[in-house]
Length: 181
Image 1 (tube, rainbow, N blue to C red):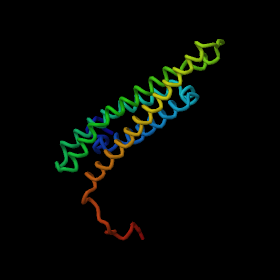
Image 2 (cartoon, one colour):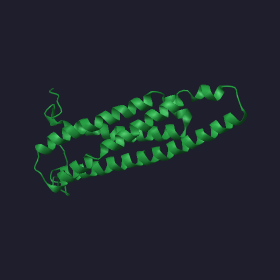
Image 3 (cartoon, rainbow, N blue to C red):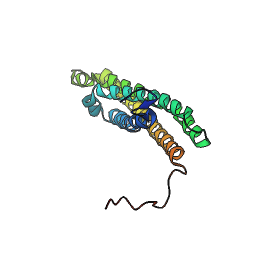
Image 4 (spheres, one colour):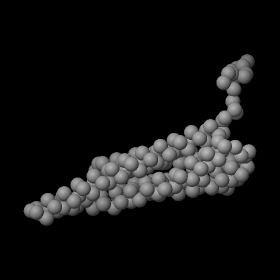
C-alpha cells in the first residue's frame, strides 16, 4: 500500500481523507456546543474536547491539499472549480471550533474546584454574574460557529458529490441487478 497526499493504495487520497473531515467537523461542532451549554459535559470531556477540535483542524488542510492534487488530475469544469472554492472556506470554521473548544476546556478545567470554594457576599455574586455573561457569549459563539461549520461541510460535500457524479451514472439500472446465477 502506497501512502501520500496524492494517492492511497492507487486511489486519490482526497476521496478517502475527506471522510475524516465529514465526520470530525460535525462531531467537533456538537462537542463544542455541548461543552458551552453544559459545563458538566465540558468537564467530562476534559482535554479530549480541544484535542478533537485540533485533529479536526489538522484534517482540513490535509483534505484540501489532497483535493488540490486531485483537481490538477481531473478535467476542469465549473463544478470542480466551485467545489474547490467552497473547500477553501472551511479552514476558518475549523479554526473557530478549535479556539472555542480550547477556551471552553480552559474555563471549565478548574470550575468544579472554584464552585466548591467557600465564600459568598457581593464578590461571589459579581463573579457569578460575569461567569453567566461569559457562558452566554460562549454558547452564542459556539452555536454560530458550529452551525456555520456544519453548513459549510454540507455545501462542500454536496458540491463535491455533484462534481464527481454529474453525468457519471444512469438513473435506470443498466445491468441484471447483480444476480450471479
